[in-house]
Length: 332
Image 1 (cartoon, rainbow, N blue to C red):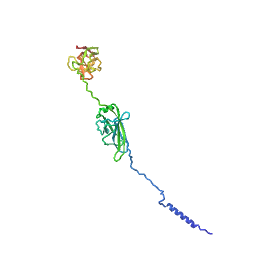
Image 2: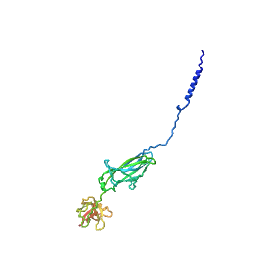
Image 3: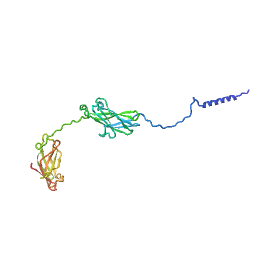
Image 4: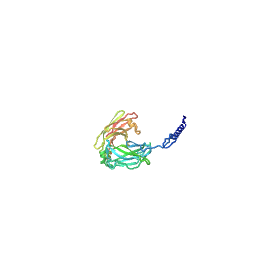
């Protein structure tokens, strides 16, 4: 018997063709097998974090902006601490003045922000409310001056001599429409000192001719070939200032002109002085082979009378250019 298989093979071929068409035709339930990619540059983005640093040295601080954008700053409040870190109530009238700029350390620089303590333990708010700009990577300066001129002495007395720490809270905020902000603290030392009490001047008794001290027995001297040794005595008197130094003054004998200083003894307790020929010839108007009249002057430390002179008590001479010296006492 003959069998016909051709229709069966034909049917199978048609089914395979239909399956291939279904599998290769995209519809809602299939996944694409092709893709593509590309790179695109976008502008730099910044976050809302303010980078702000404050470094202080004594009463001056350096403010630095490390943000990716410009910021503004201002001192917000100020408080006092003692050496142990405990809170101290700022006495009423204590004034804190802040100056900004590169020359803020100059005393004539005007204050941009001020705070005056109203009294009480709370931190003191800094007035002014204005902001100063702070560019990125361009540090700015801020200086502090503390004044107690308006503080009552009774309020300062418990703090006299104490080294306090002035702690300032500095606020920084973003420029423009941003609302990002941060605060940093800056600590500066301040020593409280009571104003000096002005004492009335002590009046010194006038050194009149009748009451002033005088050089006693001044007509004593001795000489060797090179120097004259002058000796005198001094009588201390109550109410007369101490002698700080002695001075030797000379003038040409027989004249009435002003004398010239030739020697200084910087010891108030001394009672002698040596005068050499070279001492006498240092002033250009004095000449060798000239007789000189000599007095001793007592110079006082204080008082209305700065010095007092003895009478001309000695006569000394430098013969020619020998460098030798002669000395004799004058009658008292």
